[in-house]
Length: 261
Image (cartoon, rainbow, N blue to C red; front, side, top):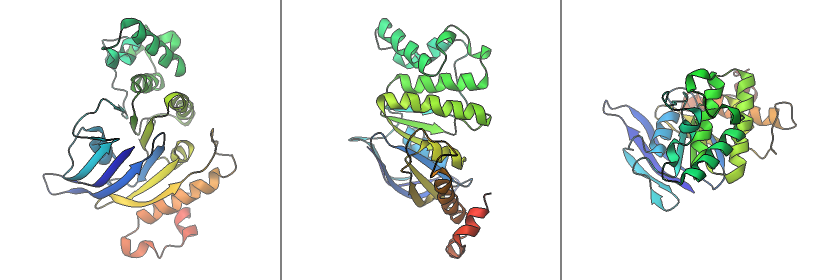
């Protein structure tokens, strides 16, 4: 389990990015973080990844404190960040150097098959499309069998058709070992498609506004029963989070939801 207790972040210039976040992510759970710009979603993800240090509070992955980059945590960024001098297969297997060569090859080949790139193992990153490069990045994150996977808007630059395809590849890999997943996104439909629970954040300083559990069966489709209702629930909370605190409760739910349509 991932546990955060009153995690805060204040930058050197005095900017309070996070005002104290307490949350728990359960084993195998997919959690989506939503919120307006400047609410601290990516800051929080960087803290969990160990890429930055909090100003206060504590973070634990199972029984271990998170004090820096953790071997049990995988990260997929907005950009694929592939190593251009390595082949597709070598990029995917980059974190498996400690394993025997045969096991490394088998794991890499399996991950590439799961994302539909089994025939591309010997190609170079520059020869791939943007969507293919992001599939390589996803395979690279899963191949190490992380306990926790962090996704920082990895599909934001892709067209809707490619995004839907990558959602399927992501869930296909997740089904095998079911790591905990924390996804930062600005796309409400993406959050409803992927997450078991949506956490909406409020800015200035960043803090949790509310959470919306999503008890929809998978695979999820925008036209499936319950999808539209879940989307509207998330939109209503998201709209409320963008209102000044003193007026948020005065905005009727139907009006708030309409602001996003």
